Image (cartoon, rainbow, N blue to C red):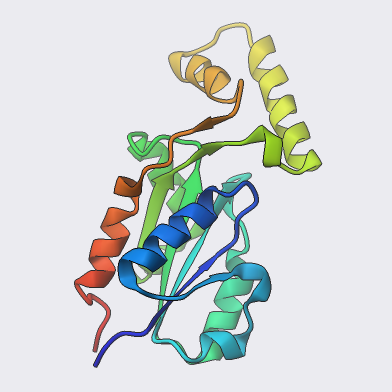
Amino acid sequence: MKNKILTVYKSTTGFTRKYAKIIGEALSCPVMDYREVTVKALSGYDTIVFGSRAHAGRIDGCKKIREMFEKSGAKHLVLFVTGATPNAAGEVIEAFWKQNLSADELSQIPHFYMQAGLCYERMTFGDKMMMKAAAVMIRKKKDKSDSDREFEKAISCSYDILDRKYAEPLIEFLRADSLSQ
C-alpha cells in the first residue's frame, strides 16, 4: 500500500516553509501551513511530516500538532526542526531532541534537524528582543569560551545556511517507505 504523506510546516521567518516545500516537491506530496491544519485535514493521510523551528529550546507548535495527529487516525508522525545551529553541532542537536522527546518518543518518532539560519528582518518583536538580550548577556560575559564566542558571532546578524542536502535524510527515509505496513 502506498504511504500517503502530508507535510505541515510552522514558519516564522521562512526557513521551515522552504524546507517543507523542498520535501513536498521531492515526495510529490501536499504541503500545508500549520495555521490551516485541522484534524479533518490530517485524517486523509498515513504519515504526517511536521516541521517547525527550534524556539527557546522547544519545537514550536509541536504540542498542538501532536494532539491533532492523535485524533486524526494518521498512522505515523515524522518531525523535522530547523534552526540556526549548524548540523555539525551534533551534541547540541542531540541535547535539543532529548529535551523535547521522551526516550520512547526518541525511538518511535523519526526526527530530523536541518540547519537554516537567522532572519532578524522577519522575526517577531518578542523574538528580536530575546535575541538582543542574549547578545547583551554574552557580550558582557568576562571569560568567554570558544562556544561563547561562536554563539556571539552567530547571533550578531541575519544569515542563511539552508541547503537542500539537509532535507535529504528525511526525504530518503520517506522514499524508502520506511513507515509502510
